[in-house]
Amino acid sequence: MGIVAGLESSSGFTRIVVCDTDTGAVLRQGYAAHPVEPKATEVDPQAWLLSLGEAATGGLLEGVQAIGVSAQQHGLVLLDQQGAPVRPALVGNDKRAQVAAADLVEALGGRQAWAEAVGCVPQSAQPVSKLRWLARTEPEAARRVAAVLQPQDWLVWQLLGRPARRTTDRGGASGTGYWSAATGSYRPDLVELALGHQVALPEVLGPAEAAGTTPEGLLISAGTGETMAAAFGLGLGPGDAVVSLGASGSVMAVHHEAPADPQGMITAFADAVGTHLPVVHTSNAVRALRGTAELLGVDGLEELSALALKSTPGASGLVLLPYLEGERTPPLPHTAGTLSGLRRESMKPEHLARAAFEGMLCSLADAMDVLRRRGVEVRRVFLLGAAAELPAVQAAAPAIFGAQVVVPQPADYTALGAARQAAWALGVAQGTLSPQAPPAWQGAAAQVFEPGDELAVGQAVRQQYGATRDQLHPGAFGS
Image 1 (cartoon, rainbow, N blue to C red):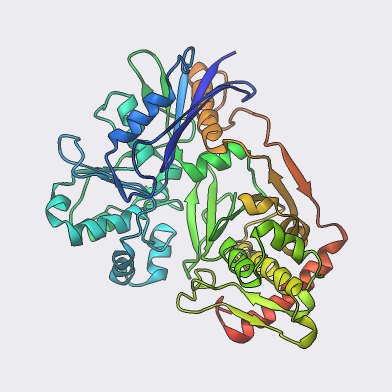
Image 2: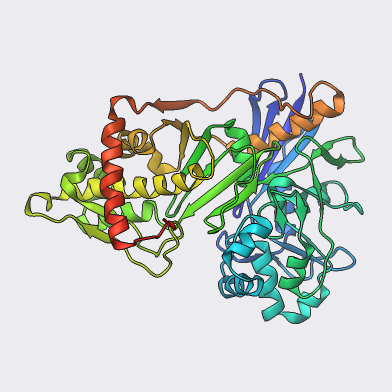
């Protein structure tokens, strides 16, 4: 039996799981909060190392043969010629680069130009936008930047003793805005467009490659972003999609290639196993439920769910378009939400509650259709987020999505994915695993919900929603 560790460095904490290489069984765990404010937009990257050291105390890593690292996506560490940080790292949740992102879109010739170049349109959080923001607001610091790394890349580099070779993986690279998942190559010209000059970019490793070995003989795998690590930890494969229910939402699916999308609604991520994770984001998900709960004066989402289940599919004709913060999918940044279909018989709290759940799920089904229209198959949908546990979501989602719905039990899937990557790289190095086949760890324990006989009902709910959407926003999806 071998032992590996998976490290998750999020915006607010470090979590480590130590696992059996053959089964993925968790043997022990460590945790430490970062010594920084979780909502900070800048942080000394040394804080990540301090947190890592605290999480690994008490002999946690004793006997470990390999470590995989995952970290917050879209963070950016800016290094000078000597490899020292030019300034504090810009973290993933920093949204100050909104104007910079819009400038970049215009500078290259629009959304389609970016979609064709790197498979995504710049958003404020992405490293390419952060580089543009830095060049505009801190030009002196920008001029000193000689190399750029993402948080997981910087941690891998530190664990290996800061070697001359700096590395990343396909998953992490695909989120930068200057690496194309479709071509598997960087676009240095986009870095120059953003920052004003060229910089050293990390070498992109294959999924089962090791970044290196420490002097003590500990193998460090390539590392990856938190989304890619979570997908690997969940055990996703072709035909699987993940619907994430946060304040905003996203639909991500496993696909054999990076789908082209001229409208730029798809972000063409690569994954941690050699395939692709195209993602479509929505601006509104659970925020529509919380707003409805406040409007109705009910105490939380559980009570809203119970109220919704007193209604029937279709909510007595009520349709809620949940575009409360504008919308990314379809691209309607300046629109507002709409409640349609008001009649005397529909003006009851339970119908509005039901319309909120159906509106949220239909909006996410619209996002899923963006992927399906580009050839992405979806047979099984993993629902993530606290709202996935709500009975009203579980009752409606299979029919609206037209697929089996899986609600995984809560677990540290990001850290587990990092550990699985470490086990794969270790197995390849030892000659016991193929670079094409990751270790077959047990999948996530989960509840499973089938659409059953409700598919026609779900289709009718979507038709009612779609008719309202198309009447108010004709051509929103380019049709």
